[in-house]
Image 1 (tube, rainbow, N blue to C red):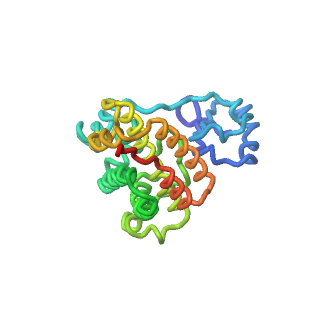
Image 2: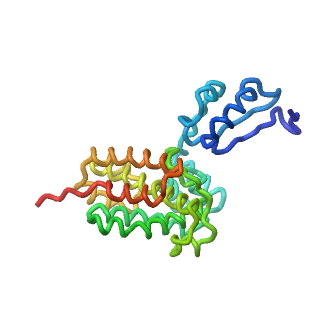
Image 3: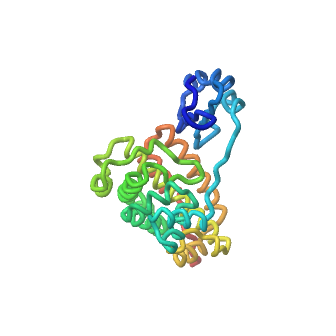
Amino acid sequence: ALLPLEGRFRVAVIEKAHRLNDDAQNALLKTLEEPPAAVVIVLAADDAAKLLPTVVSRCTRVRLGPVPADELSRILAERGVADAARGAALARLTGGRPGAAVALAANADAVIAQGRLARTLLALISAGRRRRLAAQQELIEDGGVLAAATGGVLTSDGEGAADARPVKGRARARGSAHRASPAERRAAVAQVINVWRDVARDLAVAARGGKRELRQHELLDELIQTGAHIDPLDMTTFLQRLDDLGRALDAYANPELVLDTLLLEWPRAKIAA
C-alpha cells in the first residue's frame, strides 16, 4: 500500500515461492489479482509446477535462461573477480549461471571441491556396489564445501535446489559431514546432484560423439574415454532420475537415502570382453 519513494513502481520479490504451502499461496490470490497501484510483485520459483494453478493464472511468466559464456566471462572480468581465461572456465563450469560463477570465483576451495566431485563420479562409473556406497561420505563433504561457498545458488536447470542454507564454515564443511545438521546435509546432497547432472549431461553428449559441446573442458579426455563405453539411453534415463530425486530431496526426503539410490543407479561402463 506504500507509494514508491523513487521511480514508478514499488517492487516486492518473494524468493523460493515454490516452497510456499497451499495456504500461503491461497492467501496471496487476492493481492495478485488486484495489486495496489504502482506495485509489481515477483514470485521467484525454481519449479513452477509446485505453484497452484490459480496463482500461475494470475501471473505473467518470465523465464530466465543461462547467460552466454562470453557475456558471463565479461561480467566476471568487469567485476574484477576473474580474468578472461578463468571467467570463461567458470562460465562453462556453472552452465551460464551468474550467481554461481561469482560465488565460485571468490572461493578456490569450492572450485577444487567441484572438480573433485566430478572426478569421483566419473571414477564410480566402473566401480562396484561396495565402492559406490563407500563414496557417500566424501561426496557429502565436497557437496558441503560447495553449499558453504555458494549458499545454494549453484543449481542447474531449476532442479535440485533443496533447503540450501550454507554450511557454517569451510572447516566444518570438509571432513565433518557426520556432525552437520539435516538441513546442511540436504544442502550438501543438493550440490552433489547439481554437479552430477553436469557430469551425466557431458557423458550423454560424449556417448553420442560430441566434443565441442562438453562443458567441463578440464575433464575432456576422461569424459570422451568414459562416454565411449556408456549407453546414451541409460544416461538420459539417469538424468531424469536426478531430476526426480532432486524434487524428492526438496520435499525433505532423507539425503543419505537419496544419495545411496543414485549411487546404485549410476550407469555402469560397458566394456567388451
